[in-house]
Amino acid sequence: MRLERRAAASGWMGVLAPVFAVLAAALGAALLFAVMGKDPLSCLHSLFIAPLADAAGVSELALKATPLLLCAIGIAVGVQANVWNIGAEGQFTMGAITGGAVALWLGPDGGWFVLPLVLLAGVLGGMAWAGIAALLRTRFNAHEILVTLMLSYVAIQILGWLVRGPMQDPDGFNFPQSRQFEPAATLPLLFEGGRVTIAALFALAAVPAGALLLGRTLIGYRIRVVGLAPGAARYAGFSETAAVWFCLLLSGGLAGLAGVAEVAGPVGQLLPTISPGYGFAAIIVAFLGRLRPVGILLAAVLMALLYLGGEGLQITQQVPLAATGVIQGMLLLFLLGADVLVLYRIRFGARAHG
Image 1: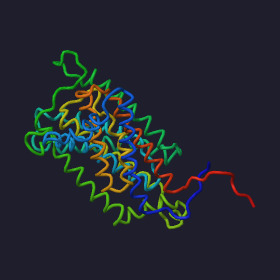
Image 2 (image 1 turned 60 degrees about the vertical axis):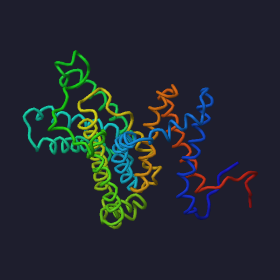
Image 3 (image 1 turned 180 degrees about the vertical axis):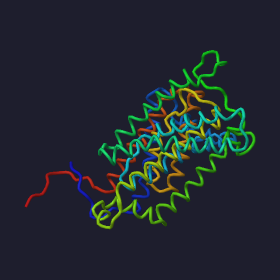
């Protein structure tokens, strides 16, 4: 058995590959539930249908889709230039730390300007953390995959130290957490009765902005040329270094915005664990959405549904939350497999010679 590259990849199959991956992942999830001794249909209902049964569930869905969408669009822009930011989780965490620090510092005495400063600090924190990877890539040729990934764990450790030390709430009975943010430093709710904040509007605005950047601007054109044909980009005078810096700073800034929106929104304080893995799941979201902003929006909603449904599975079916991670992994595996079959066909038998 061998893979043989197709003369031309089918455009329709490229579009339908994510659909096949989702269906295959759902089938794999059903088999997983059956092996665990659970009713597959009941579990699939709890995973995909039950979270959308009421307005509160839809609100929670939007809440979880927001950070996924912001992080994934930044990742997708970078991939267009062959810049692989695997560390959105760390930039998310650093954005939460820097924005949270400003919220704790200015909150008690601040006015209307506090919230913009908190959001700006979060964006700058994410950009600075991604900037480390950009510097190491452009000056020392250190691969950004390794650097951004390792920096994620550094950021998580810094957060854990801060909430157990300098930023720990003195009235918190020694729990590892900061003080609650003042109302002036928190994001307004999008509507009463839910937890989703105006950060959802920021995420939605990133969809047309990302599409405009990649499809209608000179910067987007240069990014695509650098990613597809580095030699041609150098010949045309397009700087690969500038593309690396732009993509990583943009991706880090969006991830930082997602992080500060999380702590200034539903969380309301700094905790040792802020993200359930949004930064890593955003990688799946970016590729499931075919690196296109509109597709990423749909993929973010699906991934948010998996998070929300996974929490429901714990309560209604007593299924471990780790099963959600397994389903996410299956989704990525089937997506990559579908992409391979779009580009290659399977051949059996001996290879022809002559």
